[in-house]
Length: 121
Image (cartoon, rainbow, N blue to C red; front, top):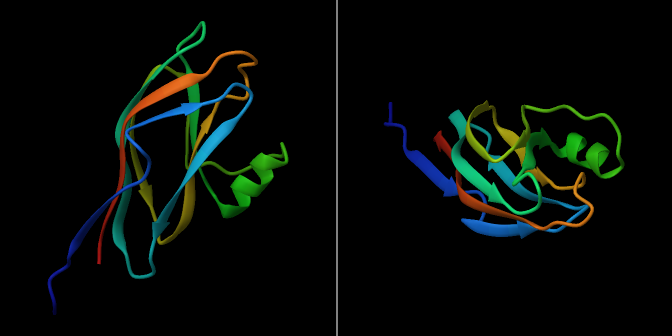
């Protein structure tokens, strides 16, 4: 049996801004055959009155429902936070990390940190 090869891929830029009343998402793809899949990292937020944002991990159906303001499945939901650490187990498939600033009507939110997907193939 061949040894497993670890894979580590950056998911999002280390710094980005989410406009008021918007969200920004980044795909997370775990190929078929991937094992021990995890989305890991930490981010901090600044801007607005609360220095806060919501981070959600959902799948393709969830992203489409989210865009249409309908109920959607989450694999992770931070609620409104200033700082968050993630360690989410994921099976092979396509997911999205969504940074939601739709609750803010006036303020940009600056997000800084590092998010990576790790798995073995």
